[in-house]
Length: 273
Image 1: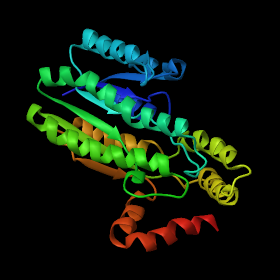
Image 2: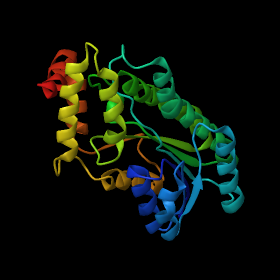
Image 3: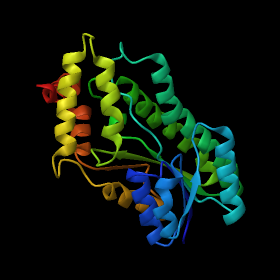
Image 4: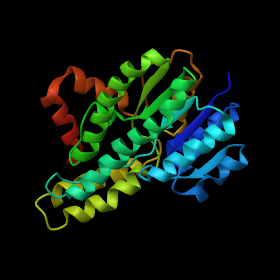
């Protein structure tokens, strides 16, 4: 059965790759993002594009109403919009930290609340949330980002239990290292925050390590690795509650879960030498 799918953060990376793959598979896809000019390739491929900021109430309502008006239903919401604020807890402003939560948690939650009445009405649907291996582990200078992903994991689990009675699935995607704009968006603000602070040396080392990882061919997985598992979740009658994919995700999550905090601390801090 072909699905009616809404994807947030569809202007680049995982969101765009997933939209294109699902369009190719015959699903009806609406990509939503702030940069509508970056989604014209979705339209050319046979999909739809809507300009929307997940933090704008009117834009959220208008986008969801448009899809329902044109398609009569929403089978899948893929909550993929998000970004990372990196920097020491002491140097990241509370304003920046709050915006991190606004986008990664509260905007995602508001978008979900927007589609749930329609999914309950049609007695079925799937909510897919992009978490991260960072939702199960941690890295230096990533406190606020990891806090949002840890929160999303628990939030999604609770939502899954609440929605089971309405035949609505809740799925969590936990990507590892993926070739996206993620690192570019995170890097420069992190460096700027650290200048002249006691955390400058640590930040410089982390930045160097990140640059090496993002520039070295083959060190990260292609976005298609994630779009493939999202497609599985979309097309499954009984999707898994979690899908883990991408470079480093499974081994890092294994170390974190089974070898304890001290061993994991040594592993992640070894990247700063």
